[in-house]
Amino acid sequence: MLQQTESVEFSHKYESGKKCLMAYRKAIIKKILSPERWRTHPQRSRTIYPLDNAPNSNPIYFNYWNNINAWTYAFYYQNESHGHSWFFKLCPNLMENKFPNWFIEWWDKFGPRQDYLPESIQKEIDTFNQYHPLIRGRQNLPEGKSFLLFMTENSLPWIWRWDVQIKHNNLGLPNLVRTFHYKWWTRGMNTDTTLNEVKAKIQNFMKTVRSQEKKPISNPFLEISKKIHEENPSLSEDEVVIKTMDFMKNQLFETFKAPGDDESMTSAKSVEDDNPFTCLAGESQDPYEDEDPNGATLADYWDGITQLLTKQRKKKGHQ
Image (cartoon, rainbow, N blue to C red):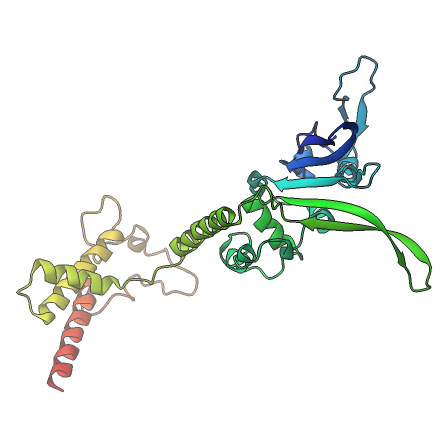
């Protein structure tokens, strides 16, 4: 079921001289089907056929919940000598989709703990959690999920097996208990090489985070003043201020200038302004009531602010 849905790629290794006794299997996890990716109702059955394509073989019908159960029962396989083990590995492409909640529970059983890693790699986990985009700043991740992301992103394998032990309950009665074991793949993994690969990925995450950090907001007045001073080094500071204010005034009025209007924004009137009967509720009916009695425009007020700034600068210069 897991193989035909292309969720897991399996390979088998038999005991030497005993082709009927499977020593271990590899399980490369490539796809985890969420309810959304099931493409039909979870209760609706899908059909698969046995891999051997036997002529008299019957199709197998299964729904989404059967698929979830297969993830557990398939890996409970055990050989006659109770020495079977699994080689697990998560493909990085799994990061393209969210892990369904049931897989977090699967990971709790079949995944390793951080202490299985060489100490040098364990030390990188905190930095990974600090900069990985799916973990950074999140405090409510399910227990073990950040380590699941670490293992998936770096595609780190682990060896897993189970056996049965006899344990006694609170009443002193013996119970059979399935116990899980895991370890680092010592023979196939070079710790130094793996450590460098982990560090390289973390460095990429750090670069991404730093590039996304907000830059301090620039001061447009200072930037314009600096440019004007560079183009006209002979100008005094007051003259630079005046030219900067003029530049900002022209930019502001040009920005809010009505399309096709040849006059300045300060002297433009809308059609509604020419209609003595158009007004907002509560406003005067007199269309001239809000005009400046002295005929001053917005540009005049802006120039007044410019003069005030230069006077204040001169006062500070005398103090």
